[in-house]
Image: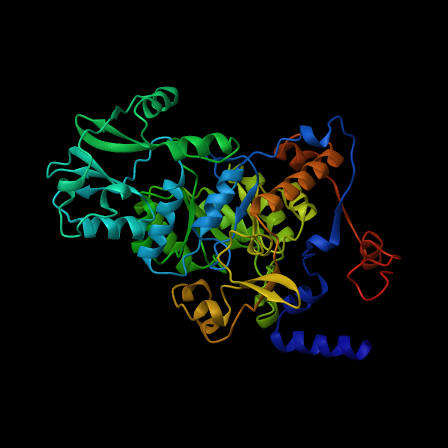
Length: 500
C-alpha cells in the first residue's frame, strides 16, 4: 500500500498539481437506485389517496409522472397514443427522416380530439384513385371536399369510392349535402347533431371555410380515457425528440408537437449550447434539454439558456447503454437527478426534471421523484409492451420484444441519429442490442407502476409529488442489506436454485 501511495505521489509531482490525487481520494458519491432505500415516515394518508399528477414543464401537466423514451424500439405513434391516454406522454424518436417523424406526430394529434384542427382534405377536382390513395396512406375513411376557394362542398367517404371508377372526379361521387357546425359548438350539441343525422363526421366551419372536424370515434374515445393528457384543444399530448443541430426538423414539427426534448448523450457542451440558443429563438414549442448529469451542467443550462422548460437527467444508466463501460464516463440517474434538483433549488428556477435511465420498477420511480424529479422517462419498461415498435419473437417458449440502444450498431444503421453521440462514438458503439420480456398491453404496466408509486408515497406520508420532495428520507443500503431486502432463503418457481 505504501509503495502504491509513493507511486501516486510521484505521478502527482510529475503533473505538478494535487488535482489528480484529490479526484481519487475524494470521489463524488454517485449513488444508484440499488444503493438507497426510501425510509417509512409518519403518514396520515392511504395509498389510494396519493395524487400522482405532475408538471413536465411549468405549464404542461401530466396525470401520471411517466414519459416514454425517444428510442426507435420504444416510441412511435402507437406508444405515444397509448401512454397519453393513460395520462403520461410519449416522445417520438428522431431516428427517421423528417417526413416520417412528422407523420407520426400528426397521427398522435389526430388520434382523438374534440375538434381535430389538422384535417386531411381533398379538392373536388381530384380523382377517385387519388382519394383512395390518401385514405390508405393516412388510414382514414373520410375526406372533406374543398373547392378552389377552400370552402367545403362535400364529403367523400370509403363507401363513395369503394366500387367507383378510379378515373371519376371526387365531385362526381361525393356526398353533397354536408351537415356542418360552427366553432362554438359544445360536445353535447355535437353528439345530438351526429345522432340526428346518423353521421360519423361533423365538419366545423367558419365563414364557409373548414377549420376542423369532429368525429364520433373521438367523442367515444374521449369518454373511455378520462385520465388522458391533452392539449387545450382536446388532442392527446405528444412530444418529439430533436437534435440541437437539426433546426429544419424542429421547424417542421413545431406547429404540431406539444414539446421537444433534445436527444444528446452529453448536452453540457459549447456546441450544444450554441445550437440550442438558436432553437430557443426560432421555435415556439417548449424545449426540455439534456442529457445532463451534474450540478454544474444543470446550473449552466438554467443560467445560460433562457427559455428552457425542463432538464433531462441521467447519463449511461439505461439497461442497453454501454457508455459508462466504453468511455468510463457517466452519471447514474439518481445522482444526476439529485444534482440537477440542487441547482434548481439554489437558483429558484421553476424547471421540472425528467429522470431518465435505469428505472426498473415502481420503487425506482419513487426514489427518482423523492430526490427531485417531476417525471420519470422509461425505455426498457415500455419496450416490452404491446404498443412498442420492437419486433415480437418467441424464444424457448416465452415471448420477447426487440430492444436496442440508440448508440448501438442497429440504431446507427438508420443514420438519422448519429449526432446523438460524440464523433468518436460513430465508430465505437455505445449501446447494445437484445430482447426484453413481453409485458402485454401498456395499460397493465402503467397500472402496476402507478399502484406501486402510490404505495411508496403512502409509506413516505406524501400525498403529492411536491410533498414527496420535502418529506422523503433516504438511507444508504450496503450490498448485504440489498440482498436481505430482496426475496431470499426460498425457492422461487422458474429459478434453478434456492434464493439465499
